Amino acid sequence: MSKPFTRSYPSHYEVKRLLHGLLQDGDQLRIARCMGASTSTVSRRFNPNDELQTGIGEMLREMCGISDANQKLFRTVRAYIEANFDSWESPIIGSDLATLVVTADKEGDDVIQTWAAGKSVHEQLEQVTEAMAALRAFMKALQQSEQAREARQ
Image 1 (cartoon, rainbow, N blue to C red):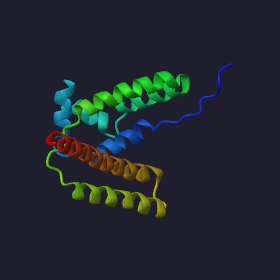
Image 2 (cartoon, helix red, strand yellow):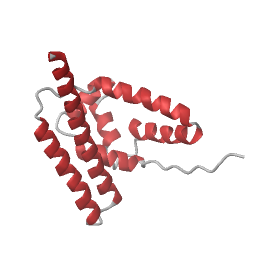
Image 3 (tube, rainbow, N blue to C red):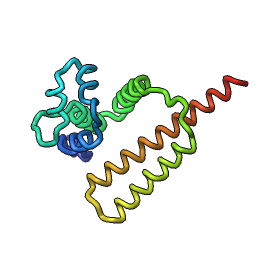
Image 4 (cartoon, rainbow, N blue to C red):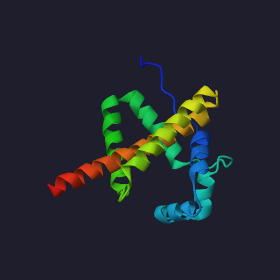
């Protein structure tokens, strides 16, 4: 007998609402070009009020199922996905570490304020996501700074 499913994943609406809120002018066109899709398809995939599902939501749902079924497989697929993400991320060239750490601090404070104000879970998760992105940018710039320092020695 199999164990009951215990993990949860964000709904397509939550994923699309997050994406829709963060997209900037021109993003959908660049995404469409990369995907080989029309901008209207991308717009629908990221519109919380459209029923077309987004691939990101599907991926999260699949990863949730994989994590429940087989943790070794989950860790392997996660590492594969993260390796791809790392290869696509642009280097943070010339970034001021002080500015990046101040941004990370501000985003962390926003998380606390959103939680303390009793905002919706969705709003809290948006703030957490932004804080994590700011911390990742700081971490990457810090690593690049150390690599540059070691290369000079």
